[in-house]
Length: 263
Image 1 (tube, helix red, strand yellow):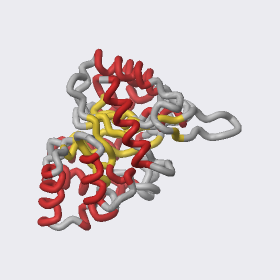
Image 2 (cartoon, helix red, strand yellow):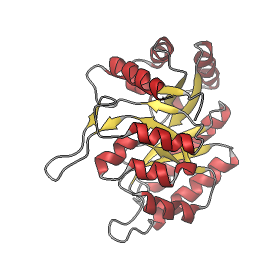
Image 3 (spheres, rainbow, N blue to C red):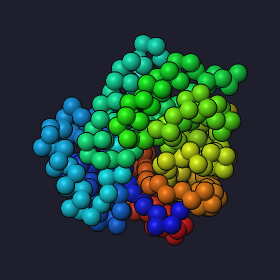
């Protein structure tokens, strides 16, 4: 895990895209992750010239366009009423990634297994297979960011899929808040991880949900996760994220400095 690429999701800077890209460069990030499920940087809102301009603007600011997010609220992979739309929109973002030579599309996927039996959802597996076939044909990695499911359940899902285009996007905060262990996933499934979202959180209790915190102030053991990924020769990007903050730019700048010290 040498020469780590530390990036930031520009949506979390809460600025218009161009201003956010410029701010990412000024904050000394090396890469940017761009939201593609909505807004000015979604496939339906980016013309051919707009797509070329986005790629050039990122490059002109000394940055790498490392990943697109395909987070589509309300369209769950386990919901038969929504899954076809989720697949279609995800595939459109994968097409955009291929056009702009962006290697990874990542999306939160929630729970993929039955809460009692732990068996993979047949609907989710079928949907992911369709996404995987499309991603594989476009030479793009689809990095699913799970929550709730532990490493054993995720292994079952990956075994059911058996496609190298489907990998894991590790979001330790989402896992901690839902009661799963990001450290165990990093230990047991390191070879399957294609992207890391670096954000922190506290675990939920019976009387309150978990909450996101500033990086280094929650319960995520980033030092151990970092070492486990180093041992597995992880070479993907690490994207600083801060979804819930009063001063996200300051928090993300601090997160970058803390992440840089781990390298």
